[in-house]
Amino acid sequence: MEIFGVLAGEAPYLFKGLLITIELLIGLLSVGLIGGLFLAVLEVYGGTVASKIAMLIQRGLRAVPALVLLFLSYYALDFPPLVTSILALGLRSSAYQSQIFRGAIQSIKSGQMMAARSMGMTRIQGIWHVVIPQAIRLAIGPWSNEFASETKDTSLAYVVGVVEIMRRSRYIISYTYGNALLIYGIVALVYLILTRTGNAFLYWLEDRLWVPGFERRS
Amino acid sequence: MELRSRSVFAVVLTVAVLMSVFVGLGVQGQEKDVYKVGVDANFPPWTYVEKGEYKGFDVEVIRAIAEEENIDIKIIDMPWETIVSALGSGKIDVLVSGLSITCERDKTIDYSEPYWSVNQAVLVSEDSDLNAITAMSMGNKVGAQRGTTGYMWVQDHLIDNGVDVQLKAYENYVLSVEDLTTGRLDAVLADTTTAKNFVKKGRDVKIIGTVSTGEQYAYAVTEGDPYNLLPKINEGMEKVFESGRWMEIFNKYLAEYGYAPPAMIPMGRELTCSE
Image 1 (cartoon, chains in turn purple, red):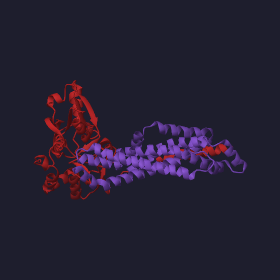
Image 2 (cartoon, rainbow over the protein chains, first blue to last red; image 1 turned 90 degrees about the vertical axis):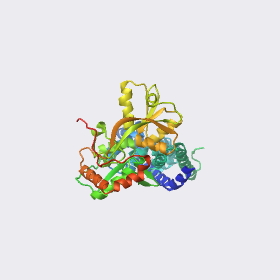
Image 3 (cartoon, each protein chain N blue to C red; image 1 turned 120 degrees about the horizontal axis):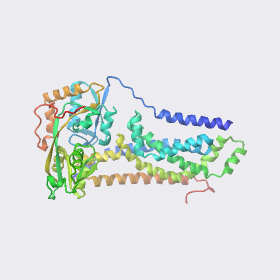
Image 4 (tube, helix red, strand yellow; image 1 turned 180 degrees about the vertical axis):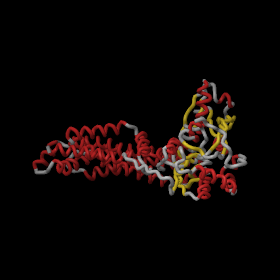
């Protein structure tokens, strides 16, 4: 079949698209990780005003569809498409990640903080050296879920001009005037492999970081 | 007290970070070093990407024009859903993608002189008994790419006049033709050039009629032409035609569909829009 010859020739360019997808994914997850931890700490320890604000930001970002956020950032900012998408999807991810971290932080028993304070640590030292290291370990499981869902959401970024794997695959469908089923099938397989590889790594990390005697995902 | 001041600081910091993210950098000069030419790379033979390379009639013509006029251009791919509004808001400077002139679009973008005419072709699957009239009435399902002139024609001339058709929007013509061959659609309305390509490429479809819309393709710039590009594009088009380069590109991409090239480029604009 002629299409397989076409696909063989296009493989390097599909791979280029995959690299952009991975760049976007790493970028947005990093923005989300920093933003999410910040929002979570603010929400749990921020006092009346700051925790209210963190909550409002987090709720607002979770209520707007990813596609709308992408378009809003695209027309409001003047950055290259990839940066725009990293910011838009990253901010939204920070809202979701903040809830993962908030849950994890709140599940650390209050005695841990009391013990830290009684040893002479300040509140911030207690959060940073005692609570967060335990919470992060607990958060890896639910975080792998966020990883999988963001991996798939990167496929939206083509609307603002990011030429990732989805867009690359559409190029082929267009100029061969068909083959949509086959090509989208291949793309689905690539996303499956990407998601499963990432999750396998996260489960490995979870086992690796587990402190004997503490809770873990069964 | 100490705790309170720290949380106020945290609030200020949060707001500052978010604000800095939402401040744009829009600076406008009268000339640019490089002009951004937006294409929707899903519209062969006009604009497409094959093996990582921009190709197509419009891509090569705009490159030839840029060469004649000594301007630097960078080709950027934008999906069809975004491309016209991206031009309207100045995210790209020129739009080159088999774009028909319509009065609706004329409100937000400015057109160059036209260079190609098309009508709308009615496509049905090869084994269909429908004719051009029955295909687009009697409750049949008609597909078209969202935001195209074909889509707008069905809406404005059939549905708004009470003709019984179900109009289905697609983000890409390929997907609508795929639905035509699997029987999910009864007909597809597409630009004559696009329709002929599908027949030529051996999809199981046939053209059963043509709606004479008399549309013309043109290049477009942001409303008000802030960089004064239209005179350059029009002049460049004429030079490219006179040098014979236009015909070379025509032979490469369009001749196989059996079209006669226009006698003159630029050709006169047919459509006048009241302000």
